[in-house]
Amino acid sequence: MTGAIDPIAEPNIALLRLLVAALLGGLIGVERERAEQERGGRHFAGVRTFPMFALLGATLVLAAGEVGALVAAGFLGISALVIASYLRSSRDGDVGATTEVAALLTYSAGVLAGAGALLVAGAIGIGVAVLLAGKQRLEAFPRALTREELGAALTLAVIAAIILPVLPDARYGPWGVWNPRTLWLMVVLVCGLSFAAFVAMRIWGTARGLYLSGLLGGLVSSTATTVSFATRSRETPADAAPLAAGAGLASLVMLVRVAILTGVANAPLLVPLAPFLGLSLAGGGVALLVLMRRNQAPGVAGPQVANPFRLTAAIKFAAAYAVVLLAVEAAGRYLGAWGVVAAAMLAGFTDVDAITLSLATGGGAGLSPAAVAGTIAAAALSNTAAKAAYGAWLGAPVFRRRLIAVLGAAFLAGGAALAVILRP
Image 1 (cartoon, rainbow, N blue to C red):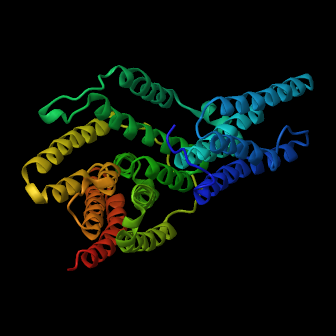
Image 2 (tube, rainbow, N blue to C red):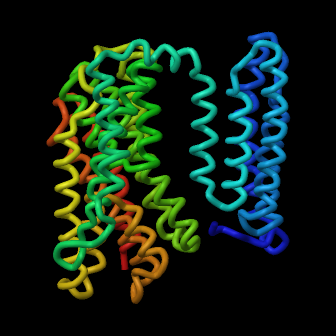
Image 3 (spheres, rainbow, N blue to C red):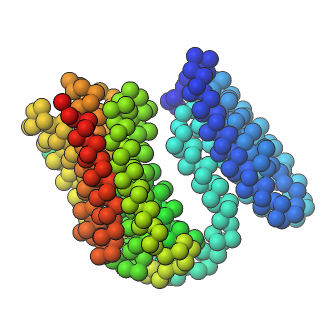
């Protein structure tokens, strides 16, 4: 696994990874401690032990410099404790293994954090905590599913677990820009985010569930999240306002993601890029707060959604994605000095991660740091404008107006900062 460091030569990075591991373990430990106290029974591990599991995994990776035999030995040791705990609790009549499995996942999250995969570790740790805390609602959810909703879940499983793996992972078309598996992945992504939002709405209520889905969707793809939420707003117009807020949250997370990717790939580039990211976040954040205050109170359930996702809308988005890929390649080949900027802006219509990493790691050779930062900012602005267009095209009127208000505020604030960045 990449991300190996020398803890002695780079103590700050090592401490950061250990801190993330400890925080994730502590989050899970607090939930387990609370749950066991409510039950009034003995607990295998709690608020102190779970952080230790995570720290053990991170420490072993840092000590070994790789995920190898030492880390495997640690996993076997934790597994032995887990098995002993399960055998003891099963003798007492408790056949559940939730806490024990959570311990193994906590150790795994610590290993990932120690290896430098902080985003993946965070997703696992937070996901485990959410699953543990939502026990009652999650257990009630399958019993409340209708036949149509169950069919939608099975459809999602088919397109993700059966169709996606068998598609060729190869390049086709002009200049080899189209990869069937990558294109179908966009279909899976849009459908999956839509279904995740549906589940969150049923478990946590309309507004709160959509806010959470927007935050998590922004970690994956704010563009796909916007398309998914816009489509849903036409099915349930009464939920258009919280859907717009969730899409706005995803877009703000996109800006944070750009900052993290740039900092990891080329930290000095954050200096000229910071004004753009800061002003865009501030502008969009203020507008979003105003929007959220006007929404219904979190936790209030909205109308039932008849279909968790629309496959047709997802396929249309994948087709648009394919067209943009071709346009990006053509711009890079035929527009000379302006090709990098044009390609960045076109790439922004689908995603900003790839172009951000490309430019931050030397893809903008020959450009000054300010020009590279300006090009990344232009891609982010292009992405913001594209999401506003997707929302206007696919969304209900209320969704359209509120999303454009949030994205428009972020766009104007970021555009002003971009003008400063590119000023001679």
